[in-house]
Each structure stands twice: as C-alpha cells, then as structure tokens.
Image 1 (cartoon, helix red, strand yellow):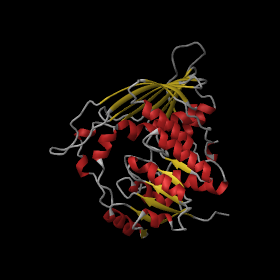
Image 2 (tube, rainbow, N blue to C red):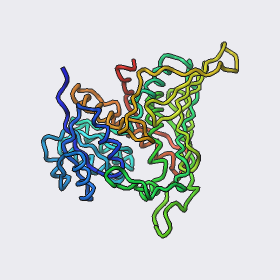
Image 3 (spheres, rainbow, N blue to C red):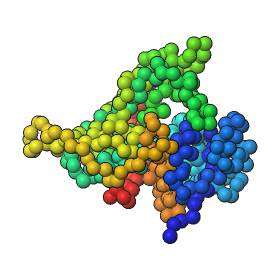
Image 4 (tube, rainbow, N blue to C red):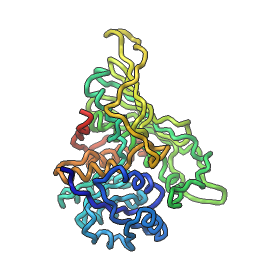
Length: 375
C-alpha cells in the first residue's frame, strides 16, 4: 500500500526553483502546498504556474498544518535563518546547499534538529542518482580492489564569457549572477563532489588547499559587486586512507568527472550532474602489472529516464532528495542526505578557501545507506 502524500512548501522562488518544481510530476508522494518569496512577484508567478497557494509571509507558511516539509531554496546567506525558523515551527526541512555559510550556524541546525526530533536534509541529490549509485556499488564490490586515489573535477566553463545576464527560468527569474560570482565556485559547486566523496570514503581528516580569483572582471559593464574565488583546488586526506584531489573552477573548459584509482583498476564517472552519466572501468591484467585493459562501459543499476522537464545542464531529479527525506520521516530513519554529513561537507568546503591552507577537519557523520535498488 502506498503511503499518503507529504505536503511540502517552498521558500525561495528564484532561478533554481524550476529544477525542483518542474520534476515534481515524477513524485506523486510529494504534494506542493504553496510557495513564498520575499519578492512578491516571483512567488506569484510560481504560484500561478503550479496552481498553489502563495503565502504572504514566512510565518504564514510555517503556520499551515498541511506543510510537513519546508523546502529552503533561498540564497545561501538565508539558509540558516530559514531552516532554524522552520525547525522552531515544528517542520522538517530540505535545504539547498550549503547547509549554512559558517560552521557555527551549521552546528546550530544539527543541534536544534536533534533537540526537537525533526529531520533536516541537504542538497545536492546527485548521490541519489543511478550513475553515482552504480559507482558506489562498483567500489563496494571491489571492482578496482582497494581505492587509493581520486581525481574529482567540477570545471563549469568560462562563465564570464557567456551571455549569463539573459538567463531566466520558466517564470522569469534571472540567474543570480551577482550572488554566484560573489560567493565563488567553491561554495556553489564543491558539494557535488564532496557529498559523493564522503559517501564513498567517509569523513575527511585533513584539507590542503589553494584558491584564486583569476577573472576579477565578471560583471557586466557598469555593474559593481564582490567577486569570490573562481578557482579552487584541494588535496583531501580521508580517515579511510584514500587521498582525493578536488578542483573547481568557472574558468576552465567543462569537466565534471570523478575518477577512482584503485590498486586493481580505474573507475570513471563522466558527469556528476547527470543521473545517466556514462561510467567506465579499466582493470589491471595481472597483479604487479603497471598497465590496464581497455575501458569497458559499466551497466547502470537501473536506467535513468531523461524527461523534458529536467534541465539540459543538470540531468538530475532534484526532488529526489525531498522524496528521500519524506520517506525517512515516514520510516523513522536518518535521511540519506543528512544534516550531519552536510555539516561535514560545509566544514571541508570552507577549509578549501581558508587562509591557513592546511586545515584539520573535526566533524563526523554516520555513513548513509545505499538506495535499496542499488544493493
């Protein structure tokens, strides 16, 4: 018997809202009750498009008993305040990354959720996709024997040369380029690989990092604003013994790959933003040989069906993370995108642009479970 649908409400109706709301058609277990945005016109446009209530205030949204999960799609600077307000109102929360913009606020969220018996889950949801779950299965089953080294890239192209001022979603909300450039590629993008790496190999013990702002003049002529790092690289040493090199930029040609090197082979995911990404495996011919057999494509645990309501640049089902949180509430378990793991990812992310360059990481989390169909 199917479980009752879970009522959700969205706070923040900006550019990213399309990624969450358009694919809700694939999740009948989630019911969109209403939306709110501090910019009234944005909320009205989204409410009209999806035929739901438009809340005038956050308090009005939080007082609606139909809302079981608050979906926090606000700008990163507002993530902690909105999440804490939702927890205070007795609501579970699914928040866009990062969990907060500083570790202290991230800890407050984790502590408040624990104190109130509520659940918080945090994007990104790429680890719930068929492609990553396949990579995870191959690592668990020893396809490369013992993992030793990982190269993770999230280079998103020369964004400053693109026509980004014209980018709008289906309800007219612009891509928030001032916020994106001010925060920098590290805060915006590192979590896609950090969530995957920490799921595969557990907590990070130490970060050795460097970063730079290589293209300071990104804003259109006549516009002013802060510009954060557009390049960051880090060597991550995991408690499990794995070492990973993670590089993010919005300067270099696109490359969103993840490569796991073991003492028995090499496993490669082409694109961490694609639930149906190609995955290849090259294995060693014999122990002791220093060359590998030609690569073979790995069969996915199940196929990902790309639909027209998914973004062409992000072939992912963003609401899958909300759906996992809803089932976690129903089943009384920890969500697979847990707040504790998100806090760890936040601590590592901030260490990647720390002025000290070498940072010990103290936070820890319980390992998530694979999805049942990926076992």
